Figure 1 (tube, rainbow, N blue to C red):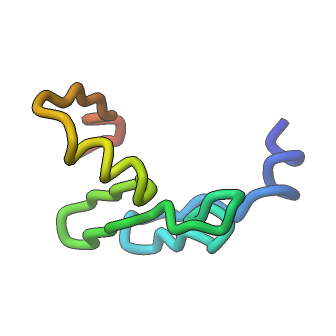
Figure 2 (figure 1 turned 180 degrees about the vertical axis):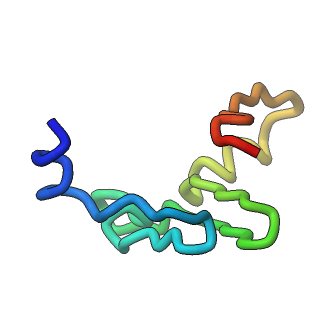
Length: 73
């Protein structure tokens, strides 16, 4: 399983500041931007399309989910 992943995907970084997201992972299959914002100092990535943002703007209430505390301090 690990060797298959290594052939298909980039190497996992050892540190957050070394994270480089390749273009295929920053765009949709239609070629639209998908990684809208990346904060190196706050370790935040925002993935969405323009249509996703327009849908959010049209709604009064949002539901959210996230992954927190998945790495050692």
